[in-house]
Length: 181
Image 1 (cartoon, helix red, strand yellow):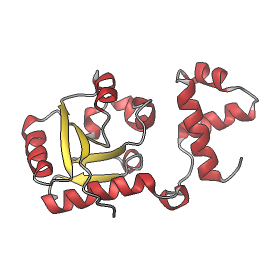
Image 2 (cartoon, helix red, strand yellow):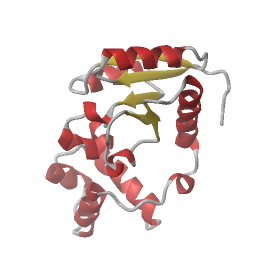
Image 3 (cartoon, one colour):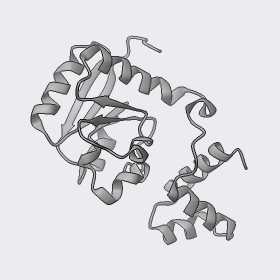
Image 4 (cartoon, one colour):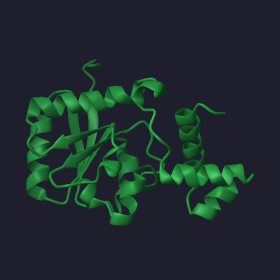
């Protein structure tokens, strides 16, 4: 795990003030982390997050609208080189948690939280084949079908109501996961 005395910038997205305040205190006890914002919901957070340039976003998956939980990458379209960490204190479907670099459990202590956050940063720089060889997500399968039909990025973006950048990201993930170019 890297620890080069850098202060990693963290955004917490958590609707409970009690939980976000406690988490913030535990995180800020460590010199390697700086909580730059605490946001109560995801509704208008993207614009604000882009300006904050976080290294880590800790998010309660329950704070994400139900139909968008499966598409974290699309929800944070444009956020680059950021580790996503799920804050879990109730049941969250395992498929949803696969999108995150790691999870924080409500019972984790300060040391465990610090280790998990540093691990999530390390996961960003790990070679792609070491991160995961997961199956394609449902959205990636949809994109692959469109590609097989000969559609170009702009057509795929329009068809699936996503940005061209998101289509390109899905294409990269498809290539990485399948090894097919």
